[in-house]
Amino acid sequence: MRRKIVAIGGGRIMVPAGKLPQTLSIDREIVRLSGRPRPRLLFIPTANLDDSGYCDRIEQHFGVRLGCKVDQLLLYRDEPNRVEISRKILAADIIYVGGGNTLRMMNLWKKLGIPNLLDRARKNGCVLSGLSAGCICWFRQGNSDSRKFADASNNTLIKVSGLNYADLLVCPHYDVEKHRQSALKKMMQKTAGVALALENGAAIEIIDKRFRIITSMKNKNAWKVYYQKGKYHKEKLPENEGFMPLNKLLSRN
Image (cartoon, rainbow, N blue to C red; front, side, top):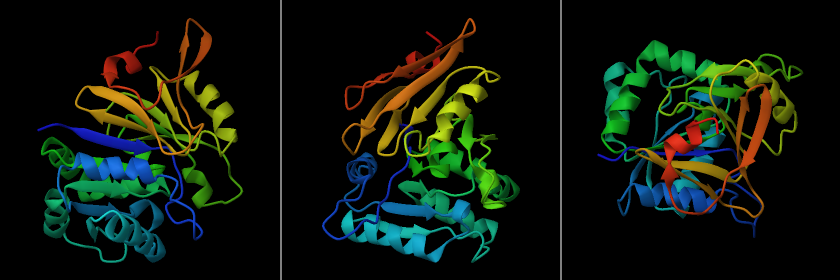
């Protein structure tokens, strides 16, 4: 089975009347990748403590607007047993992970054995997707604002480990949260490999060992960031073009 990830830097799905959701074309691609006319989408809002309003927005967007059959995995509100968790994850055509506290989410997932189930879903061809925390979780590490959830005044950004389906450190919200740019530059001084910085409305789509950058709004970008021989490199990646070898993104040249 093909292994598919669509990880989004950020963007609003619920907007004022007359406006389109900021991630609409990316979300349509997520649905298309499932290969089903009415895919089963499992929303996992762990990072936002199973916020009911967030769940309603996902139902409206992916269910009503995009034609998915939406279910939810509520690990805080419902506290499902492991049999139910497994059933929901392995039945999904699409898994969409919401934003919030990445560190708290990853800690709970590990406690409940969810990483192994997500890996099984991935190998079965399920589309893995999400934004912000739901973007970071699929990669080796992420540039995360998890500390602010305990202290709103704490803007310190930390490295949080994800599921490592691609060997990248990923930084979401690279344009709208300006402090991430300097923080990522500093973070990469002590981090091996390459970082991927995604602006809101930009996403990386990975199918097996190939990738492309897709965008849902004008003038939105993705950046390859790394140090080589002590020099800082920040390279804009081409968007909305053909797929390229993932190794090309992972290499520091």
